Image 1 (tube, rainbow, N blue to C red):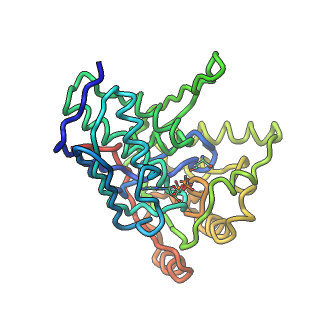
Image 2: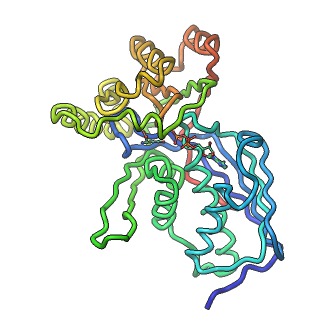
Image 3: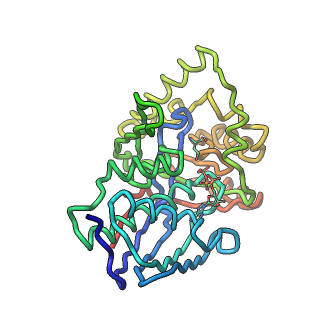
Length: 310
Ligand SMILES: Nc1ncnc2c1ncn2[C@@H]1O[C@H](COP(=O)(O)OP(=O)(O)OP(=O)(O)O)[C@@H](O)[C@H]1O
Ligand SMILES: N[C@@H](CCO)C(=O)O
C-alpha cells in the first residue's frame, strides 16, 4: 500500500561536486570534490515551490522540470511514497557546464533528499546506496560523476547491459580511498562547455593500440590514486578522449599541457572545460596567478565523502 508523507517534514542534502575520467578512465573513474550544493526539501499540503540561490538561479526552470524536482519525484516513486506538495530550496555553488558534474550532483541531491524524507516516514522503505547509484546514473547518464557524488572518494563505475530489451542498464560502482598526500586543484574557466558537443567529437572506433594504452593507464590510475601518487603523471595519460576534444577546449588543452610540462598531473575534468591538477605539492604561485590572469577561478579542493542528508 502506498504511504503518504505528512506535510511539514524537512530534510537537507549536502551533495559534492565531482570530476570524471581522471584522464584515462573515460566514463569509468570519478572523484568526489569538496565543493557542495545544498538542497532543502519540505513537504507541504499541495503544490510546488522552487527557489534557487547562487549558480543557475537565473537559468534553471523553477518548476516541475527542474532537475532536482524530477530527481526527488523519481526517488519517491521508486520508494512507493506519495506526497501532497513540495517546497524545494537550492543553494548552489557548483558551476554549471564546466566539467564538475553539476547535473549529476543535482540528480544525486534530489534522490538523496527524497530518501531522507522516506526514511523519516518509514526507515524500512529507504533506498540503498546501490539503488542511489543505479537511479542517479540512469537519471543523469554519467555514472562516473553520479556514483562519486553518492559514494564519495574516488570511484570505479561500470555497467551491465540488460538481457531483456527495454530493461535499464544496471550500474555499479565501488569506492577507492585516495592517498592523503594527493592535493587537488581545479582551474575553472569562465566559459561553459556542452558535454553533448564535446562527446560528439569522439570517434565511433579507436585503434586497438590506443585502447590498450588506456587500459594500462586506467589500471595504473587506481594504483597511483590510492597507493603510489608518484605514478600520477604516467597514470593520467589518455588517448581516448582528451586530444579528440581539444579543438572545442583550446584554453583547457593549453593548460593541461603547461601543467604537465611542470610535472603536475593535469587532465580535463569530465567533458571540460575545467582543468584538474593532481600533485603532491601545492600549485606554484606563478601558475596560480597566470591561470587567474587568464580568467580562471583556481579552487583548492579536498576529496569529499558522498552525499549527506540531515
Ligand atoms: N543544481 C542544478 N539544478 C538544476 N539544474 C541543474 C543543476 N545543475 C545542473 N543543472 C542542469 O544541467 C546542465 C549542465 O549539465 P552538463 O552535463 O552539461 O554539465 P555539468 O554536469 O556541469 O558538467 P559535466 O557533466 O561535464 O561534469 C545545466 O545547464 C542545467 O540545465
Ligand atoms: N565521462 C563523461 C563525463 C561527463 O561529465 C564524459 O567525459 O563525457
